[in-house]
Length: 355
Image (cartoon, rainbow, N blue to C red):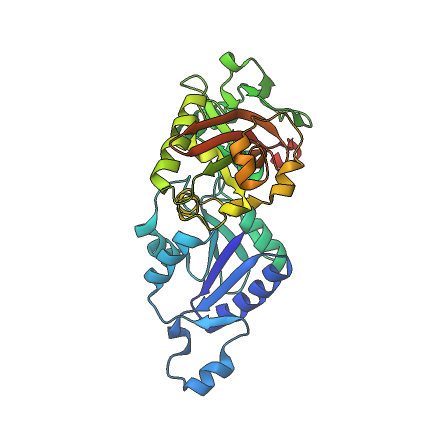
C-alpha cells in the first residue's frame, strides 16, 4: 500500500516521523511532510535541526498536496484536527470506488480515526494498522463493523475483487444489519465457512454474485481483477488498433475492462510504443516473456508458421496469456495485424479475512 502522511504541528511531526519509520519497517511505501507553519519564525538551520527524520517541509499549499496524494496514494493520513482534513479532502472526492483511504490521527497519538473510504478504500484497515503501530485506539464508525456484521465490500477489497456496481452495497448491508439472510454465488471455490447471514444459492437467485460476467440487474456484482491479455502485433501497430480489438474481444466475452490486470507479450515487443501506450491507458503492467519461456508453456495452442519464423515460437498471444498459469478464456483472435487471447489466473479466495 502506498501511503502519505502530513502533520500540522511540530508535535505531530514527531509522531509522523515515528509512524513513517514503522510503516516502512512493515514493508509499506510511505512518505511524510509537515506544514511550513509548524516551523514559523525559525532560521533555515534551526528548521533543519528541528525537522524529524524522514520528513520534508511542505513547500506547496495543503490543498495542492492533498490533490496530488488523491491522484497517486492508496492511503492518506493527517495528523491534526479532523476538520482541517475534511476541508482539505472535500474538493477532490470522487466516490467510494475511487477515493483513497483517509485516516486522521490526533497529534498526541491517542486516536486513529477512519474518515473516508472505510471499506473499499481500506481506511478501516489502515486505521487499525496505524493504531497498532503507535498504541492508539482505532475509531471505526461504519455500521457493519460496529454491529459485527459481514461487510461484503471490505471482504471484496481484501480478496482483490472489484465491486462493479457499488450502488448495490447498501441493499446487501441493510439486509444483513436487519438480521436477514443474503444469497451468495461464486464461480470459484472459497476456502472456509460462509459468514453468518450468507447462504449459497444459484447464480440466478443470488443477491451477491462473484463472477466475471454481469449477473441479474439487482444483484451486487463482485469481479476478480484477474484477466491476463495476451497480445501480438506487427511492428509499429498504433495503440488505437490494439485497443479496438481488445475492447471487441472483451465485449464479446462479456468481461468488464476493469477485470484486466496485465497485458502480456513476447520480449521482442517490450519497446513497442502501441503496447506501452495501451498499458499506460489501462494502468496495468506490460509483461514480456522470451521465446524460450513461451515455448515451455503447456497446452494446445493455435500455431502459426509465420509467427514462429519471426519470433521463434509458434504462438505469442495464447502462450503469453497463460505464461503464469490459469485457464484460457479465449483463444487467438486476429484482426488488422493484431492478435488477442484471454486467460484467467488461478484464484485463491478465503472467507477467513472477513473478520
